[in-house]
Length: 261
Image 1 (cartoon, rainbow, N blue to C red):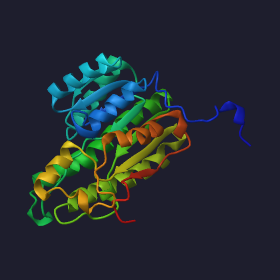
Image 2 (tube, rainbow, N blue to C red):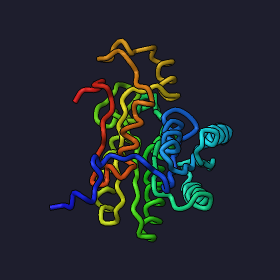
Image 3 (tube, rainbow, N blue to C red):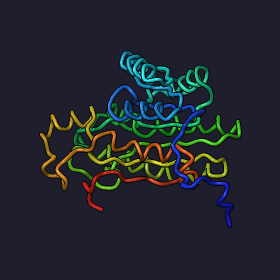
Image 4 (cartoon, rainbow, N blue to C red):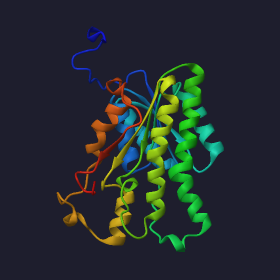
């Protein structure tokens, strides 16, 4: 039996003091929120994206709120840039112990009308980039014999096709789910937990583009509402904190009952 005295009661703390987090796609939407939440919980945060001016504003706001953050330019489709981004984050803040793979793009095109260049961009952003970022962070943790937490931002689209014009997005998010499960098994011995969050329809810049194309569809949802990014805070904090030490290889669905099971 485990020694219960070695764990607090309840074992549910979200204090991230001493942790260094890296968040991709942090210039807007969910990534912006994730960075703020991690900083508020005590982590030092490297915010990464292509739109540097937005990152600078985010860093200033985190600092004003009492947190610590640095802006790191990053295009996740560029393998060399991924290595350079982790180098920059660690030089400024210390070893990255928490990775949130949030960067992603939709497809919004019929499969037979996609150019090869567009296919490469979607796969590069949604799958290859998260893979390379996860392996870059993990190899450094493994070399240092330190534990870590990786959270991949998937989508409920990884479990169900959401209609015409989403085939490639659905494919990449399904692959992210399997990547999460496979890397969790491979790195379990190294004390690196790999999990994913699969949001449903949440308010974000990406969702704004979908609504512009399709119209407001909240009335078609069971609870007639879109998610607020704040409703993902507790799931994120759980997966990156000591509270989830025994949880790895899990994809947490957060969708308000929007998608079929």
